[in-house]
Image (cartoon, rainbow, N blue to C red):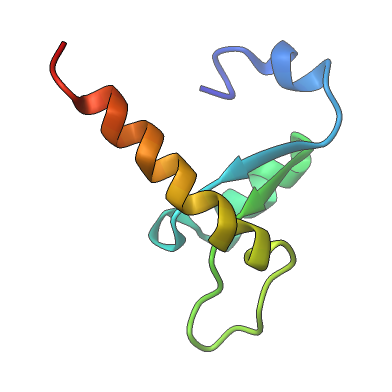
Length: 74
């Protein structure tokens, strides 16, 4: 997605991508940082709490509600 419309990311500052922990890696996070995108994800068990993690805990139920609503048949 980011490669398909890289200009969209380049035109805006403060981009943030919210992700599950299992979708994260150091390489992926570095690639995002090079594009100017901050990755917001839960910390791993052996990792100290990440910046923004408390906000993620508040936003996550809302995201799940929206996803559930979109999955409902029309």
